[in-house]
Picture 1 (spheres, rainbow over the protein chains, first blue to last red):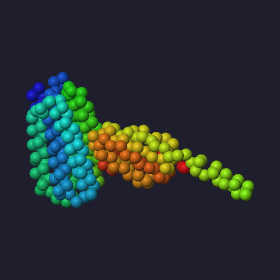
Picture 2 (tube, helix red, strand yellow):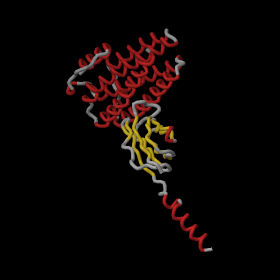
Picture 3 (cartoon, rainbow over the protein chains, first blue to last red):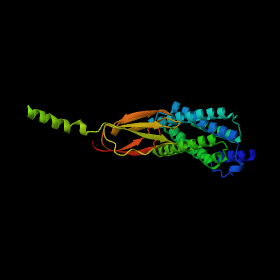
Picture 4 (cartoon, rainbow over the protein chains, first blue to last red):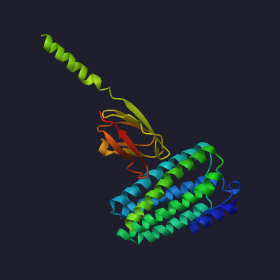
Length: 173
Length: 105
């Protein structure tokens, strides 16, 4: 199982798809940690954007990311508490955090339109990667029905976020 | 006396009795989608927007006379004020769009 989580992490780092078998995927505790980490990282990216951008559409997008990801993560925390599952840190969560840290540093050096473009392009890539992971690995691997349902709700939401980011990226080019 | 009374009777027959009382329709928002829009909505009717999602939405069609903020899990009612065909959208999630047709009164 740990090997598969490492493979998922490698794929996330590479930004590619992850064709892993459901039966050998990550545990619910690891899935919960990965999903929560992804949401928290995107909320942090939104806070950085709100501190830097002056573009009303980029601000509105970042506000939506913050509001939605905090809402889903609040629900995820309530669910793991109810299920008495302790989210388990793993190499995928660590890879996501490392990648987000590098992006935050890169974005911190940019301003104005250059920042807006880089933030939104990263949002497209981030949501594409997370949605790919949800579809191919996290949802099929989830054993608990409530966790699976929450991940499916997350996928519906993040799919909309990805489309929103793609439209915004086109406008900013 | 008879003529004015007859005139009053005609007025009563023609006026608001013929305009049906406003109705309230329900539209459920779930999994980032608006549910089916009601048919035969007329100006003055109300729509109860039920947000079953975990996240905040809006039901916005300013041209139709409403812009309703819908925190997660809430139901709020808007009144349709104009006839026509309108796009109803969520201000926070641009991909959420649907069409509402409001018949003439």
